[in-house]
Amino acid sequence: LPHKDNASYRSKINDIKNGYLQGTRVELLDNIMHWATDEADQPPILVLQGAAGTGKSTIAYEVAKRLELCQQLGGSFFFTRGDAELSTTEYVFPTLAYQLACLHDDFLPHITDASRSHLKKGGTQGLEFQLDELIIKPLQKIHANHKAVVLIIDAVDECTAKAQELVPHMLFLLFKRICDLRFHLRIFITTRPEMHIERAFESEHFAAVAKPYRLQDIPQSVVGQDIALYFRTELQKLSTYNALSAQRPDVIEKLTERAGGLFIYATTMIRVMRGDPYNLIAITDILTSPSPSASHSALSSELDSLYLAVLETALSKEYFTSLGSNYELVQSVFGAIALLEDHVSPITLSLLLTISGGSIDSILKRVKSVIYSDTDSSPIRPLHASFPQFLVNKDRCTNQAFYI
Image (cartoon, rainbow, N blue to C red; front, side, top):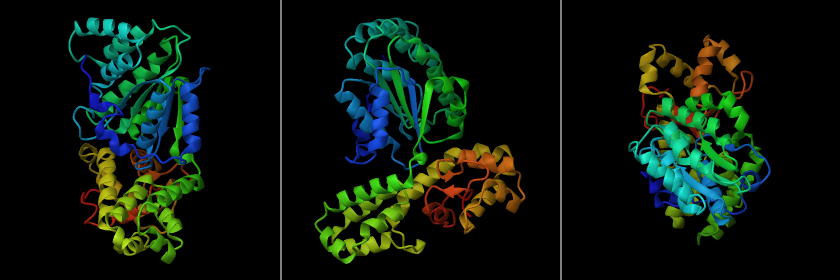
């Protein structure tokens, strides 16, 4: 059966996602694990949705570890942007079927027989045939009293091969077929709020079988406490931390404030500080400086790569060539977000720019991974304070379509 071992959470390419700190994300992980292991009726699909850099893959990795310990992990597929075999839907269902058979002896004979029959009809087949023949039909033979088993599909937004068509198709198939089993097979999905994925989540099939969970709904005070604990734990590992703490007693508070609720920002700051512990005070002063010109190059580099990847996926070359006015529209909306001192609502922005609300909404829906806007009357907020700075710096924002 064609499958990809590197898709598993255990693969060494996913080591970077193994960064969970004990004592953080406590309530979130408790809720996920309750949903995953509860033998009572639960929605079979849980979708954890969050903006770029908010720690979704780290959560997925930790959930996989915990489920494997209690022998309720069915399999995991971690999408990886830039890897041809891990950024396509082609291997998702065969890989999960393979792992289901390997991790659960009672599934093995049914999936083995199904795989032999499936492969007689061809090698890599369509998603519907893969899901139906390799997972659904063989597992229909499993008794209803079997304990719950969970499949994890992480970073669906990093599936880039024909993503506009195949990702919604994959999700629709899961929504439609997951309830055809007698026992509790559950699916934990993580993703950024990309437009083509959001459309799938708006379907009636999704509402009937899925439970959405948005990271942006977690109170900022809770996220801030977790990030502060992370800073305190990691900095205490450095031999020069005591000197830093003595001279900068509010360092944890300042670093936490600077991170702005973004875990990738916090982890990047720690990597920078860990790289030169003997100049820790000077580096910390740079990282916590409110001045954009004082930002550390290593910190900016990682965030800039993240911002560019999100924008170039959401607003592709095809988007700009499909309608000539799209370039001016993006420039106007991004310009206002970057340069206005106050956060304004989409309605107010429409009036300021004399652009229709529908046109502004079409941009905001595409870039929800880096810009928040819940309703037409709520303020438009960047993911992080560094995003507007990125847009107005030509050395950082190297794609002229987004540079203001």
